[in-house]
Image 1 (tube, rainbow, N blue to C red):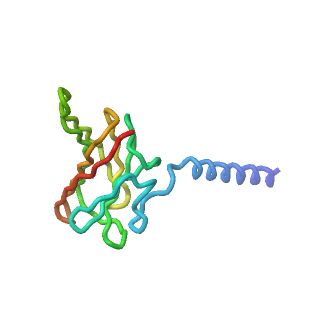
Image 2: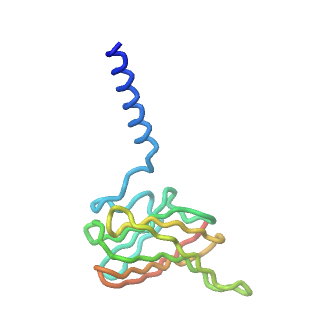
Image 3: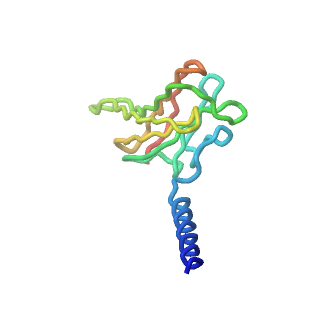
Length: 147
């Protein structure tokens, strides 16, 4: 009886661990592997590379989650402190300019951020990225098309 109970407990633990690992959101960014998902676009800010990525590698119309990683020449994450991501579409005709700011949160890796944004419409946007902190100050604008 005791062996049966121990065996059932062991199977339960294995099942819970398997369930937990299979339901996790994938790999977590590290200093050596900061860019997660498929890169949408990359750009340069001062002596750093900033990469915006997602599961699909695309910016789409509607709500979505993105990742932003700031890296040095060797591809390692760099702590930039406070960062922001805004999607800007200039005014066209009678339509005013649009700004869709991403709500960024930090991850366990300095220099890597998770963002949630709602893009209002398909078409050409500028990803406006800024940072200020231990790596100084910087900003860039990267064109992207929302699908």
